[in-house]
Length: 77
Image 1: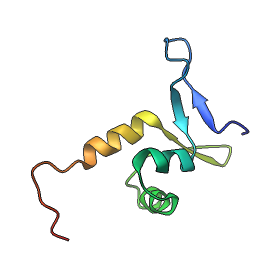
Image 2 (image 1 turned 180 degrees about the vertical axis):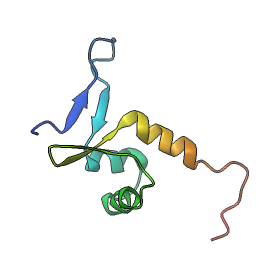
Image 3 (image 1 turned 60 degrees about the vertical axis):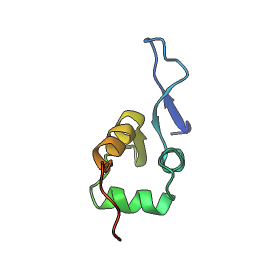
Image 4 (image 1 turned 90 degrees about the vertical axis):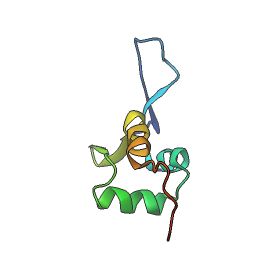
């Protein structure tokens, strides 16, 4: 796969990516690529594998953040 970003089509969001490669996914989440890789290998973040290329749906990244959000809790670590 040559394209680094996969785009939506037909619903008016022509410029909004549908899925991104690991570098862009890590940047969107504000984490390193190695942290993203650990999350993927631990089964904590969804991904798609197409022809050996790992990609992340932007909608899944957003859902991962929502599911991981802490509300009203202090981080004690």
